[in-house]
Amino acid sequence: MKINGATLINFIELNEDTQLKILTWRNHPTIKKWMYTDDNILLDNHLNFISSLKSTKDKQYFVVDKDEQQIGVIYFTNIDTNKKECEFGLYANPFEKIAGVGSILEKLCIEYAFDILKLKKLKLEVFSNNKKALNLYKKFNFKEIGKKIVNNKDVICMELKNENR
Image 1 (cartoon, rainbow, N blue to C red):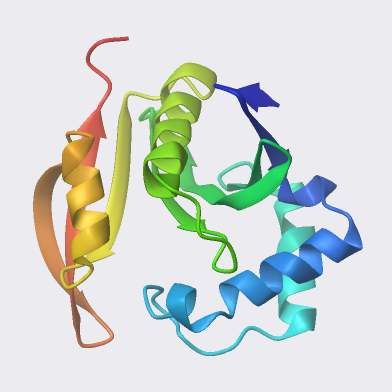
Image 2 (cartoon, rainbow, N blue to C red; image 1 turned 45 degrees about the vertical axis):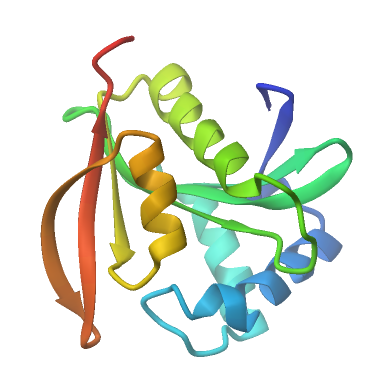
C-alpha cells in the first residue's frame, strides 16, 4: 500500500529475510529501551506473533519502505471500529540514520489511521523520559490526557482527535 510516497508492507506479507531483520531492529538496545518489555524477543515468539496477525482484526503492523530503503515500523493496536479509535506506535530502523524519520513515520501513522482506517481518535503511550518522542508527538498536536506507571516507569498517555477530516 502506498501512502505519501512510502510503501507500507504488512508484517503478514514479509519474506523470511525481512521478518528476521525486523527482529534485529526490535531487539536493538535503542529500540527496546522504549518498549514496555525490554527483554530480547526469541525468534519463535517473533514468528508466532507475525503469524497471529493473520487472524486478528484489532492489530496491524507495517514495515515502511521509502526511496527503496526500509526506514522503520508503524503499528496500530486495539483498533476499535465502533469507537473509531486505536493506539499506535512506531520505531525507526536503528541501523540507518535518516533525517526526519520520526516525522515521516508519524505522518504515515496519522494518515493511515484517519484516511485509511477512518478513525476519529489516535492514542499513544510514551515514557515521560523519552523527550525526543514527546516533542515529536506535541509537534503533531497530540494532547496529554493522563499518566500512569508501567514497570515502575512514568508513562504519559496522549491522543489526537480527527476533527478536520
